[in-house]
Length: 93
Image (cartoon, rainbow, N blue to C red; front, side, top):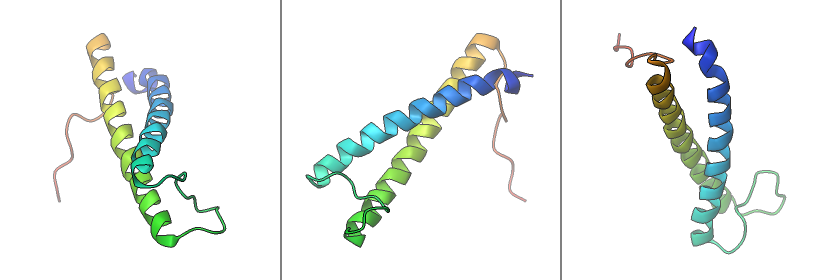
């Protein structure tokens, strides 16, 4: 039941993580280059810069999303007393 109640919190958290990670990537890229980060849909782009920009974008998004998700679950648990998800990782087989 708590998973269903947590769903809207998770959606809002995902949107927040997306906005935060985009700003953070922009700040990181600003320290690397004066131009905006290249995107795959740009026709004339240096592949090295594109690779670096994509790697930074992916890494930052995953970290921010994971931290926001864990934080929202922690807050949900504090409010409701129920953790919406697994308590610990599954053991290796």
